[in-house]
Amino acid sequence: MTNRVINSKICLKRGGIIEQYKEKYRHELKYIMDARDAASAVFQIRHFMEPDVHYPEGHYRIRSVYFDDIWNTALMENLDGISPRSKYRIRIYNESKESIRLEQKIKNHDLTTKRSCSLSLEECRCFLRGDAGGIQEEDNRKVLADFRRKMLWNYLRPKIIIAYERTAFTYPEGNVRITFDSRLAFSGSIHRFWEKALPKQPVMTDGEYVMEVKYDEFLPGCIRQILNTGKMERTKFSKYTMCRMKNTTER
Image (cartoon, rainbow, N blue to C red; front, side, top):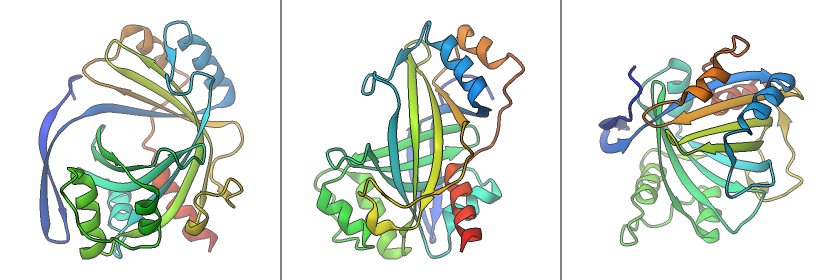
């Protein structure tokens, strides 16, 4: 795979319907590491990378509710390694109702792209109840219209809440973003999505981190040096798949 941004038209088949999107893809690399290696990596990248502009003070909390259809298509395609594939989620930060995002993440091998739009609180509450409402396209939120169609036609419904803490850094050359995620946990209590005291089941042990490296056309040499120390090994890691499978075994 060459290190360049891929602007391509992909086809996703869902319920007999073929959808075409022309998207700008980014490279995505994932690593699992312990607290010591994570601290070492953060120490090194702080010399030339900037903290996330929205959370310069450090880590923040992410909470997402993921949707799947009655055939568990998103889960099965993740397990089978199908490419391209996609899944929908509603995401909030620090349990705040001020910014609610509907996101469709599309993955094609090691490349990813994301379609997203903002949601009102009422829209979000409807979707968490499994209510698609009417299909509306006049506000130009195409991803929202597509999401509603899948709720109506494919019985897309909320399946699981996934929560974790994140620390993020950015670098302008190559449009690089490196994140460190910890305290990964899940919950099946969809109706308690907003509660700070959401009951959760941990998935990763204390001190275990997922480092994700996203970039456009190239990865700068200073960052490659950190990744090529021999201490970190790339992994095929899906928070969604791990939490769904763990949730199944917990029942």
